[in-house]
Image (cartoon, rainbow, N blue to C red; front, side):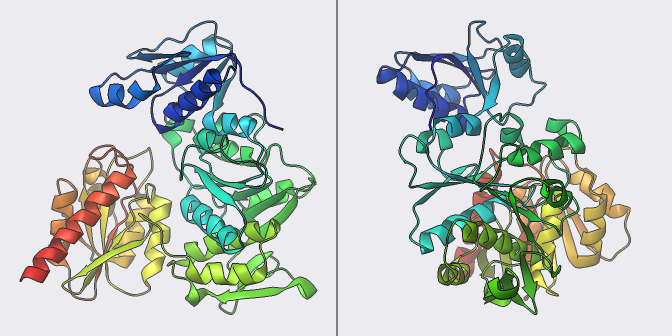
Amino acid sequence: MSEQITGHVAVLGAGRSGRGVTARLAEDAATGVDVRVTLIDSSCTEDLEAAVAPLMGPGVEILLGHETVPSDVSIVVASPGLPPRSALVKAARDTGAPVISEIELAYRLSESPWIAITGTNGKTTTTSLIAHLLAEAGMPAETVGNIGRAAVLVVGEVGPATMLVAEVSSFQLALTERFHPRVSVLLNITPDHIDWHGSLAAYADDKARIFANQTLGDTAVIDIDDPGSAPYAERMSGSEVEIRTVSLWQSLAFARVEEGMLVLGHGDARVELVRADELAIRGDHNISNALAAVAAAHSVGVPVTALREGLRTFAPIEHRLEPVGVVAGVEYFNDSKATNPDAVLKALTAFEERPVLILLGGKNKGNDFGELARAVRRRCRAAVVFGESASEFADALAGCEGDTVVVQAQGMADAVAAAAGVARPGDVVLLSPACASFDEFSDYEHRGRVFRGIVADMLAVGEQQ
């Protein structure tokens, strides 16, 4: 049953999540619910003022350029971008009120069953594919969380017949208390966001909160090929939750690959789905994502025929190994969502033996580039490093053996031009930056769009020649 939120709610952060929470609670206030909202952000810019202007009205107070929280708040909803050690979050905790995430609030307001997907990498692809498989089966579903609309807005429009498929981050899970997905999916845990969580152990603990409230009748899908996520299959084995393991090669896994075929179940329940080479999404990591998606979708009743058709028809998603054009015989791929080294290591498996020229750069999130540098030296013909972390990449690559050409560039446009200058017909130019985008762009989507636009301009010039 859904819960009604009353009292004085402080919303920290006026980004997409914070504005969504404010809008939803303002709607409740307009219908007579005894709730008022204070939206607080430490920044105060013209763009932010314009973004929050539509929210102003009865029951809503907006404080921009503030780092204090009213002492009489009954609950605080913190945006995922706010680090736990920020002045605003510390001020919120000093009030003694519970501090929760938007996804926790959305769960409390919802009547729908949830499928929740987390992991360092692969969340967006797996979330989108699960929703695609449900749609193929004619089952109503909405994607929420980090993709789609803010969950807190969607839950007010759908009822218990609609499945919510949620991409949930470690930031969101860290501030959950009652969040209880019917199906949880843990894809992998590799170093990322250490600057936010403080340690890899804390990051893993927050990811694992996805299982915290699951019980009899629920399902947990866990990739056991990944060293970070695999231990949770054993830890969950003593619970009442059904564990569905995923592996590219382990024969005891529930979802696995056998001689190139994606397979579910064992014995009389064994079902063959499609061959791995029938998938339009590239790389071993995407086969793992597909296995996790079908294991989750199958657990909520998607029939095998719909699983097969959905796997065959699912197309690559925007900013994740997205083909964006072929210029002078060189194929360009937008993998802007690869914001950590592990995502790039997985992306490099997608192109078999084709020569790769990789674009690396952006704002480092506290990650070490040593392992990635060694892989780039082994696999890539050239590496173009750019942005705030260019010198870090250059130093890491200089410390490894290999013949990879290393070029330093100032920004995205310069980096693409540099790659084009050394590329040969048949090569792949791959934007897979291993970093956040905030040194040059508003987010990874903005970065990907700019890259795609540069390639489009190159195509247009080529057509005119």
